[in-house]
Every structure is written in C-alpha cells, then in structure tokens.
Length: 231
Image 1 (tube, rainbow, N blue to C red):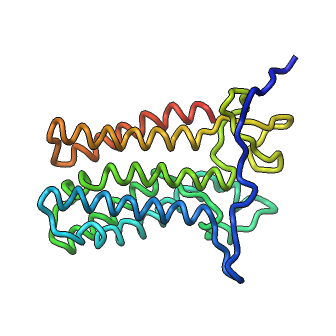
Image 2 (spheres, rainbow, N blue to C red):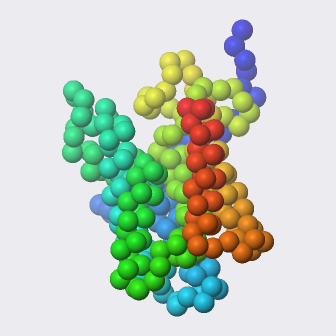
C-alpha cells in the first residue's frame, strides 16, 4: 500500500506576468535580486577592508556578463538533449529567460570576467574574490527560488512532509508521482548557511589571500554532491 503524503507545498501556478506586451519572469527577477544582494554585500565587505567604494559594482559588471554566458553554455552542453535532439528547437538554447544556468560554468567564466574587471581597476583578484564570496553564495540561494517558479531542479519522488508538488507534464517527472524532493530548496538553505559560515570564519580567523573564496568553493561543492545524490 503506497505511503500517504502527510504534507507538501505546491509549485507556483504562474511564473510569468505581463506588463502590457512585456513578460516579467520570476526566474529573471530572482537572478536580478540575487545579483543586487551580492553586490551590496560584497561592497560592504570590500569597503570594510579599506577598498574604494564602487569597485565591487564596477567589477561585477564583467563578472555577471561572463557568468551568465558561462552558465548558459554549460547548461546547453550538459543538457543538450533539450535543444538539439529530433523535435527540439535549437534556437531555444538562447532563451536564458526560460531557466537553465549551470553554476560551474557561471563560476568559471564569471571568474574570468572578474579577473578582467580587476585588471581594469588595478586591483588583485584574490582580495576581491574574498569580499565577494559570501554574496555569491547568497545570490545562488536567491536564484534557486527561480527554479521553484519554473518547476525545475527537483529531486526524486518522495512522500516526505516537505515534498514539493510538480505538475505531471513537467520534464523529468516520474509516471504516477506528484511530489518530489525540493532539491532547489535544499540548495538554497545550504547556500545561505554557507554564506553565514564564510562571514563567521573570515572574522574569526582573519582569512585572506583568496582563502574565503576557496572555502566557498569547497563548501558549495560538498553540499552540491549531497544534493545531486537526491536527483
């Protein structure tokens, strides 16, 4: 006899709203909100270290542009069946507003963009990366809310009380299942906790020379390995 779901939470019924002919997508709003928070937090940390105000936002322009391109390219490569198999529309590979950003590509190419921005401002990359690391983790957490609106990046079917309800017609669903592990929520909570740990560790041990960013990479990777096991 199948287990009874004691509780669950639904996915949003709508992920896009229209301002006249202009679509306002929840996924894009979450990404923008994450970027704004990351820049604000990074700026505070940079100034507290004696840096010039405005530096973080200037470098972030390069990092964000490169990061978005890198994240999309990584997603399209690793999930190419969504765009290039028979019956698929290859042009949708450019529809970033529909969701689909690979974090590893975003970090890799975003780092290149940050390096370019730092060189243009005449500053070293490691101190900038240390200042920005907690904000990056927070931005990732906020961005995962967009996955909830898009009903994507959920895990295996489950009857746990905190399961998320996914429409049966969504990709990667399992026949007969309606509730799944909310792995996007797990990752969001992990990222927010990681940001707090980074701030604490930096204050407690006076980390520097890129070690805060290295701790961010290690912490995020550890959480991601566990989360991927639920998908």
